[in-house]
Length: 331
Image 1: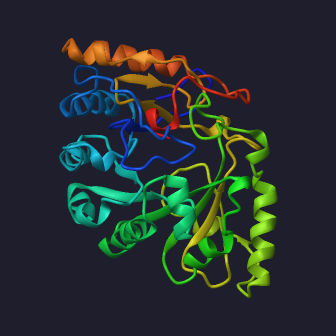
Image 2: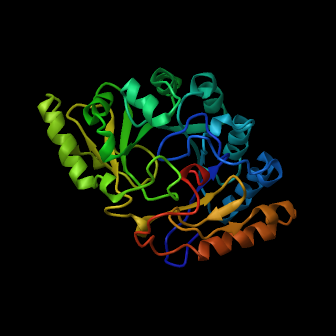
């Protein structure tokens, strides 16, 4: 499935809800988000039908996201249905980990092979500050559950924000004795300023600077310098560039969404919880697939996906600000 620029689009990110049990400062306002209304949210069987059409067109990889996908009733059953859909090769899930200890085994049994856990600090006080209500021990319990359950890949996603003064070395240490892949993500200009401080370019730490900073800090801590790890990339065709500490089981990845965007190799579409296809995270252009799937016409669903495919922009042109917040588009 090619877009108008010849990129192969084989990855669909699905937001199951814009709700979350946390209120991370860069993602959601503290009071949460306004109710969309039950009738405006896709039903689980509608997700499954959209995925079935998308798979026939060439989608091979699906990621379930939110908000927090595990707060949506029926998440495990949907994962199983998607994993059994002809043409789908992998089903992954992004979570904050809080509910994972009770659900990890069921998710694996359902066919989820990869877990990404969003975790921006390993300091308990700072974690509570960032999430506004969360407790670090709950997230760490989720991380341990993911590792012990035996998913094919477990990654930790860390949004790097200059003003937070996060401890990079503590994350690097996690990769030494565990097959864990920590990825540092540049702070992205998504949303409209309704979060604590909105987005500011001063808070973006360019990947090149972050690599040097982390490598130097790891050397000072006696862990050695970062080394390119292209031969040890974890499964999954993602945008991260990977490095590794000497002798480490895991890797350290960097996603440069702002300083060195990877639009030329973008392979994804996004499906929002209210039934819109977004061709680009940084664009407000959306295509209504909810009406199509509720019409019962499979061809209508295919037509909307084809429109979204043809409407996928060449790049995001360093746009700052979007109508939807991060929790509403699934990251």
